[in-house]
Amino acid sequence: MRLVGRPAASWARLIVAVGLTLGALSVQAQETLPDELVKSVTLEVVSVIAKDRDIQAGNRQKVVGLVEDKVLPHFNFTSMTALAMGQNWSKATPDQKKRLTDEFRILLVRTYASALAAYRDQKFEFRPLRAKPTETDVVVQVRVLQPGAQPVSIDYGMEKTAAGWKVYDVIVGGVSLVANYRTDFSSIVRDGGTESLINSLRAKNRSIAATAEKK
Amino acid sequence: MTSAVLIERIASARMIFAALVLAMLAGCATQVGDTVDPLEPMNRAVYQFNDGFDRAIAKPVGSAYRDTVPVPIKDRVRNFFGNIGDIFIGANNLLQGKFADGASDWARVLWNTTFGLLGIHDVATEFGYEKHNEDFGQTFGRWGAGDGAYLVLPILGSSTVRDALGTVLDLKTDPLGHARPVADRNVMVVLRATGQRADLLDASRILEEAALDKYAFQRDAYLQRRHSLIRDGVPVAPVAPRSGADLNESLSATVSQDEQSPHVPATDDVVTSASAVGRL
Image 1 (spheres, chains in turn green, red):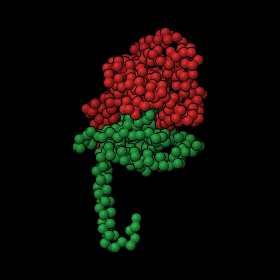
Image 2: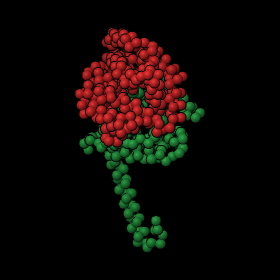
Image 3: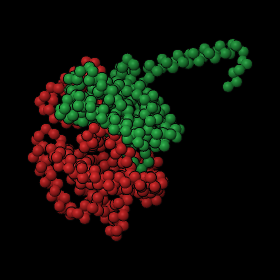
Image 4: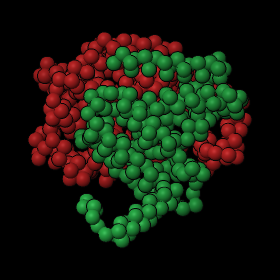
């Protein structure tokens, strides 16, 4: 870039151009379609992993950081927790809801990081979304291709919110994460109430953190 | 598949069949109840045993295999056994009336056995023939058989009455089972199982980290996975809608349902709440 020494007029034009581009980008960010969002985030995260030697060597803390930076902002954890709680959600106090969401979020981030750490060099196939523009609740389909094995589908249940499209369920190979937690949660709540579930989640998070530190 | 040899040694297929019929009767007897897992106490005991076996033998062997065998070799081993598996994957697709898929599976066998040098290279995928996942349990499911009670089989793990019957046929038709001499067959069966366990190391680690109750988490994941496979991945609508009035509505709908039967299984939950909002 040999911009130094160019006439002032060129500079001005350049600045205007940059300003216009940024403006266009921020407008785009608000209107990013859910399938495009999934694609760009996936490719971005994967390219970071492919370049990062620490992550490849098993640095879990760094993967967690990556998930928190790039992936988390696109998840709606309150929705996920509410759905995983099922009918018990409405029985929880606002304070319990908050603590539940916080603990569940930690667990999900670690699980997601753990899954990402297993990424080798699989290819992705992004399916274009077949949904009407008016829809506010869609399923974005991605397939992970791997040699010698059946492709694995990853479907994202996404909802339109004021802050853009947010993920509220991840369905891997037909297994909905939220549905799976629902039985887990409901049996604990049935036996010991919501507090007992919060405690189980907290204990689980602590034990994962402890084993992660040992490594 | 893990224990084709083991099972053949421990018991004749006839004995397994008798055990399955018993299990099925037990299943029928209690299925009227309100849970997918009427045999939970027995299943948990078997699960415990399997977990011990896995920790002591399968997982260490699988890890050693993953860490010592070079990737190209592992790929070839996987492809070789995958090619053998494609024969009956194709047969099952045909039995399910999916003729194009079945033909594609057998085209895979043809290409991979020849150009792929007895299956060690998966050239068919590059030619556009995608690998499928089928077995007799899925065929029975496609024909309309329900799950039956959830079962944990010794060594083989998660299953259902329907899938266990399928597994009996899978084992009987397994081309590897007919390989001779027996010593060679045993080596191949163990090698295949080792590779399969190695491929599952990441998944089992994730399960370990994600689940509050590993047994229940694995059971529900298995049942969801099988339902998805039987439908060939046609996506089940995600759990329920989200924000605002929608969410409250569907949650209150779930409450009224659950008051009638407090132990509605999660998988049914998904279906009922999803169809309640007309998403299926």
